[in-house]
Image (cartoon, rainbow, N blue to C red; front, top):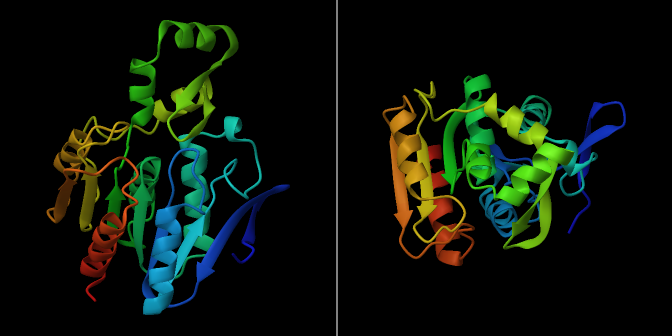
Length: 247
């Protein structure tokens, strides 16, 4: 795998990214919480975009993967700002933003902030407002740890436990979207597995209802899990990008 490029965004702080030049609209991949740009979906989309001659960008949020910073210092607003820095200084032309899990929240914030750049959105198990779910599902011990030390350790089905901080939860509350209309009018395609153990598939329906766009497709995969990384799932993601790019 080739070495990433780095985008300086502050003194001593850089974002790692890969940019494939090609025809527009450029596909921008926004990964999930604790994930990095070396995941199955991000790499599969890059291979496909290269083969099709399409522009493509994947990147790591601050504190993720190869980017600078500590994960525990980050928040939804910080990671949305990272994505906007990539949009403004790396990605070219109109964009199809693909967001996986937390990246689905980030893609919505990008579309709200740069509507002139975003042609369409593809959400993969999109998880807007997931910090509310983290808080509501916290155990008594986790709530006690949060009150005492400002964080708790969250078990993960995908690896080591990760830290959930008071700052993440508080900042998430400043970026909630599902409580009212979402002023996004571009086409949106939402894919969600009905065996998703992390984000309920009903979230896709709630999001579709809130979006002001009249061109919203919800695709439920009955046997699909949260990751949607099987070859059949990747084919569905590619098909959504093709439809929304008018290829």
